[in-house]
Length: 464
Ligand code: ARG
Image 1 (cartoon, rainbow, N blue to C red):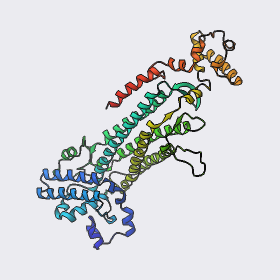
Image 2: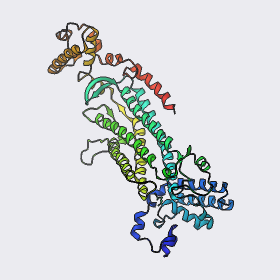
Image 3: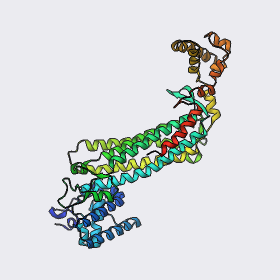
Image 4: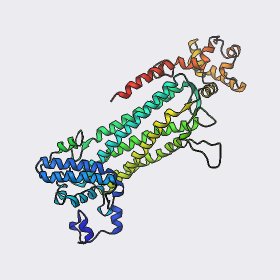
């Protein structure tokens, strides 16, 4: 056995040193060291359990606790030296522990495998990441509510096919964003609900012959329960896939909203002003103020989808149980954590700083025949069948297009040419305010309804 393999924690059965390239190729320490806290937390729980069932002596246990605590400080102080030769975060920490406390360090891995260890670490890591993300999502949800509250009366065109459809209020539109984000939060919570189970004790795959207490480690680590099946526990990565699915859906939502912010801040729409601090300039065109943050968020959605696909493909070919393929789960997972965290933060900061331009929104809404449906509905009340009313209004709109005048700019006489049922009260219906106010039911765009929706939303945010 060479010196190189003596240092390896699994060096015993090897007679040749690992190829240098292979050593680097198989190592994960460069990216899994970010789980050092969870790894130490898991080891502390495991050691306490071993001590409590009498597998580990109390002196050894104390030495392990002390050693691991010091190692955490070393890592946080930046004095810990990570070794690629020691492959991953788990073996780096364990080797350092043994270096510090001697034989007691070698007893930590009793009744455990890196397979249940790594499965535990990732679950703890995602659980923590989810708690941080939920705080950011809550900040974003509150930003939406506050922005919506300012604009329950602000009229803008509502779009289908990006064509003016019917007038809505800006507050109503922002509350649509709120609903999207609230569902994202629900998906985040579902992810945690299912992942919060302890794999520890599953060991390599079949469990262990030591008289372990799995419930104890689960309790110490704040897991809701133990994973029921050891084979599943070491090989399952569904929770990472679910997390990436949550991240993808959230990014898809942020991307759609980004698209709106980009359009609306353009000179052509001019509905909103994005604060300078969330935009950048052009090195050649002095007049430019580019909505880079929104564009980047839109662009980064691609990463999140890629990471989800990555994990799905990673898992699909793997027979039970653990395979080294699983080491490839971390980079996409961490990238999704970072991506969604950054984008949520950017959004939660930027949304409250959006300056709406109500006059421009109103002007845009008054073009494009936004109240055509209202005129049709008016005619239905006056006794026409809806399809006939649709036809009548279509003709009136065609006339308006030719004349370059909105429906509300036509005279009563002109309107009556299309249907004698039209009377003077039609102009109330043709106003934008009248139109939005008439959509006065739950989920509708009437300012009174939006106000009530915001109030309910504040309460719904507090629900678990
Ligand atoms: N670095 C490994 C991973 O991330 C840890 C588990 C290794 N287990 C094994 N039997 N090789 O998956």
